[in-house]
Length: 290
Image (tube, rainbow, N blue to C red; front, side):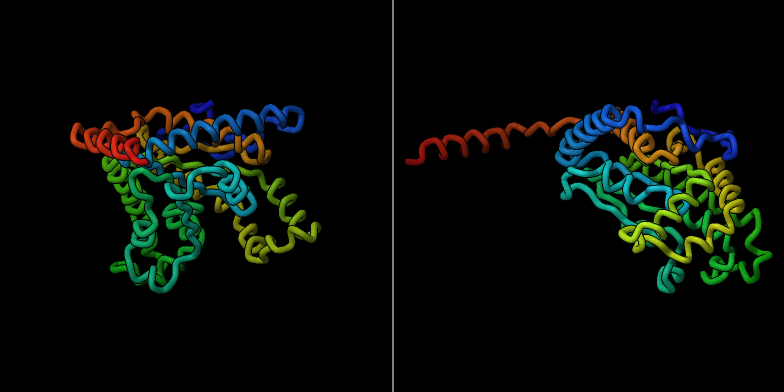
């Protein structure tokens, strides 16, 4: 399953990528068991990774509103040791963030080696939302960008290159980057918005801003396709996950995540001779206590 939804080069066509594979309803119990097995394996791998501190994992989730990022993160990482786990959520940049380079706020939230870090939205917002609403770029007061005409193809190509270089840099420093686009149909988004309105306990999730952004659906499809094609590489591929069925999408993501982490040469660190001697001495002192 790991490679079924994987893109490593400029060959992604969003209108050909499925948003639905099959319903989980008829096999839900088995799917939940498979997910739970994956989560146990992730937890075991995390312990070794945290003890060794040689590798880190950065998981990036991108999606349109209501695609299920929050519930995906809550479920897939349930039970993971919080000591070696962190989540960062990136919204519209603040005025202070706009005074820095666009990766400045990202660096502040990176996990350390030994940790699993999750970005709920990420630096990709700067080639997605900002490309649908290029006026955001003007607010950054960048040199050579005075009008919307300056936010052109050359500008975006530079941003894509910056992102690719950044991910190469992280990879060279021991980080595995897993990039997931939760690909949802327009009809399913409508249904989920309606449930947020019609079901009282879900009302808190509703945002009029989400409805406003829905009018840019076609533009978002275009910019996602461009961003994925420009930044999908063999070392740091994109995974485009059918997200109309939440349980099936969780199974796919947990399967990819599990197998990728288990490919790392993870092991508990071996103590040097002097540390083993300290352990032996400590053991002797404890056993000699009355």
